[in-house]
Length: 553
Image (cartoon, rainbow, N blue to C red; front, top):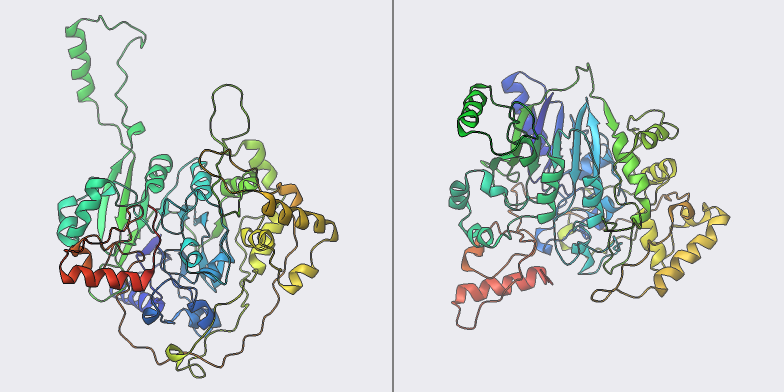
């Protein structure tokens, strides 16, 4: 199966699909699948655009709305994860994944799917230490803080992905795993991005949770983006490089003669080398001319004629179900089960058992992902809204997506967005409230009371209990068809592609004045001293005006 990998899409779907068409024409081949590594920018209309965490001058409706409205259709099955420049309100409607447009599928906060037998896993967002232990408490309309924290990776998704067993063919992330540069051409990377050096030396370049996932999951391929450059690496895994067992009884003492040991080593050296498990890592650039933003790979898969088979992953569905009680929608820190000495307090290993996998068939007779996309809001109209960059448009309110409602109902899991709204005393959309089973009203009150009563965790206080047990949170939620008045929108789009800066640029050095700033996940933004040259001071003001970031890490 021929798979195209895209780095940061930045909303330029037409350019990406045109590039794929050129590749197909020149090589006389057919691309079966497109994978995008974040910053997809699935903005349907002007309200969606207001939830994207970028400076106002960089807000651009781009071309996704054409695929959402049906004006265009994606020519190839497209799967993407979220980055740090997204229509966060839309993606938050699909926490477990779903169709954002016909033939364009979002993996959710984290997800695993199978395409023609190729197992693809991914995690959305970027890592920030000060949000990692929190729940998914955000909901639109966002504040200055939550419009950024909404796309920060949380511990629950990492915990769930660590429960996977078996082979993972492809893993997608936006961030790079920490230390990945040690397995590739580090010198060449530093020639391209010299201001990476300080963060490399301090171990701050990349995401530590992703480094843990890389070691735990050990996928055949790992694709990423975010840092706006192409970089390849080969990562060997330690558990695949054990020393060969010597001939004879493995329990023999170490007092064997040196001559016999040398004979064994000599005979072992003549054996063919054992295959070593290696992850092939590739990061790609953003969609700009003369940039390495697209790569095509030929990956072995099941021979399927016609459209690729697109299915849920059974093991992942069981993991979602068995860890549903661990969902939190609170802003304070909470902790997940871990291995404890002595008596076992609660389950901490959620790798599915055979019994759990068998029970899934009672809920999913077929794992094929249904093509149940529905347009829930009006799309951007370039004729009626041709002057959108000069208009004042507010953020949208929260909507509940019918795809998520169906998925949660069948699997028996909760929609975090719905829980966040209830926990904060917000009204659900009218149709959703009317469709709730009357028996669930007590549960709703219980959830609201519990969220109000629980105090934030301070210091080493014990972790809070799960928000509510899964058996008590089965809500039948349906999204109403909202009407959006469009008195506005978008100026004729400039054909040039804006070199979008990354969120939370760090003004600590003069080198960070380059146009492609790195979104450092853990280093505090240190302002320059009063004696700094004017150029550094200017950079500081620019970052303060653009981001107003509160980085505790």
